[in-house]
Structure formats: structure tokens, C-alpha cells
Length: 283
Ligand code: AMP
Image 1 (cartoon, helix red, strand yellow):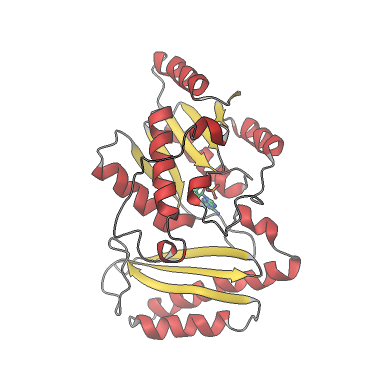
Image 2: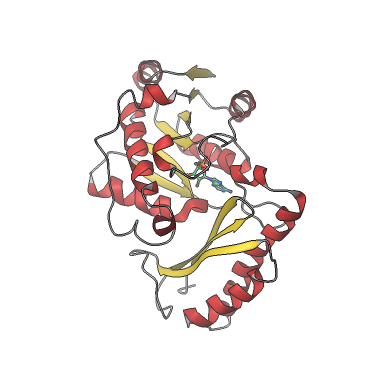
């Protein structure tokens, strides 16, 4: 496995693979890799001949009071995991390599970034879309792999790629969960044992929502109230939002008529956690 810390080096590696007619898959990450990330690598290996994993804690997607500084960066461990997973090249640039100058050129997807995490993390998605556009330009992959875990991010990236005619396919992979149901996340490392137990209530509330929908509930206020009741059983959980939104516009809906997304963000102590379920009422 190769490790490239510069844009020049990763481009050289990809160029060599292209010369051999290999298709290129990119898995963008911020590192502190877990089974969720590795499921994306697995999917990339199935669909592409040459897999690039980027590990970059992107400063432009963090707000001033967020956890950029303390975000975990266990790079040696990450490289071992990538090697074991059969990754071809890890792109692990410095912030200076990615942003040699103060950014004045942004890629900004409007409207679908207003609600959910866009509301509570102003500027976050502008940072995500800008860094992904840069990564797509640097690596020029045929496919890039994202997790349903960050549902809004996946929808926003898909829209950016469509609107700007970027020549790649976005593949969205299912959420990998702990035994307790909690979605795997690099931020789970921040949680104490008790907080982990409490965090499993997020999944419990999503299951309740699914049960209600399966048995015919369509009124989102009623469903959200039930979910709130479950989450409020744990004092440590501070709800940021519980929203049921249209899967395309990401606007809140009162009544579930078409496919939708139920999305949750909470804080447990200082840790912000998100989770979601896609709702498909056609099956
Ligand atoms: P991150 O390193 O948190 O920026 O995540 C990198 C990619 O991994 C994103 O596309 C995430 O949606 C995806 N991802 C993170 N956690 C999971 C998970 N539990 N299951 C599936 N994909 C995940």
C-alpha cells in the first residue's frame, strides 16, 4: 500500500493505475477508521480496481466552537487498517497541502443544506462540498463512496455532482452499527461507558419510529413526540433535532406521503451524535 502526503504524489499513483486501465474508487474520510469506514472500502474494492482512501480532518467544515483540534487522529492505526483492507493508496495530506492559501473559492449547495445539520452547523456543508470537490479534482475517481450515516451529506454531494456535471458516480453505503444499535462513528471514542449505553436510545427511538410507520402512522408530529419521549428517558441526552423530511428537498413534512428521511442529532455531554433511517413507504 502506498501513502501519499502530497497532491502530486497521489496524482502520480492514480495516473499509473489509469495507464493499466484500472477504474478508480475514492473513499473520503477524516480518519479514526472503524468498521463503518471499512464497509465503504469493501464496497469500493468490489466495484473498482484501484482504491484510494483519503484521510484528512478538514478544517473548513468545522465551526469555531467545534471539535477540530481534539478530533482523533490515530494515523498509524488507520494506515494498518487500510493496509489490511487492501487499500491501494492512502492520501493523507496536511492542511497546508490542501489549503496553501486562505480559501476564497467555495462550492456551495443551496437549500438542501439549510435544514437539519445545516441549521445547527452553519458553514459545515460549504466546507464538506468544497473539500469533496477538491478531492474529486485531485484523485479524479470513477466512483466515490459515502455512508448513509451522514445522510444529508450524501444527498448534498450527489446534488453537487449532478449540478456541476462532475464525471463520477456517488455510491451510498448502509449504516454500520454497534451491537447496541448505535451507529459507528469516530466521535463515539469521546463517550464514557454510561454515555454509550445512553446513546443506544437514539437507535431505540428510530426503531419506534419505524414500528409506528409500519403500523400505519403517517403524522410526523405524533411520531416525533413518541421518539422524543424515548430520548427524554435519558437525562444525558440533549436533543438538537428530530426531523422527518422529504428525501429530496430535506424540508420538514407534516405527513408522510412519499419516501422520507427521519434524522436525529443529539448531544451527550460534549459529544454530538447523528443518526437516521430512510423511510420507504412503497415497500
Ligand atoms: P467521516 O470520517 O466521519 O467523515 O466519515 C467518512 C465516511 O464514512 C462518510 O461517508 C461517512 O458517512 C461514512 N461513515 C461514517 N460512519 C459510518 C457508519 N457507521 N456506517 C457507514 N458509513 C459510515
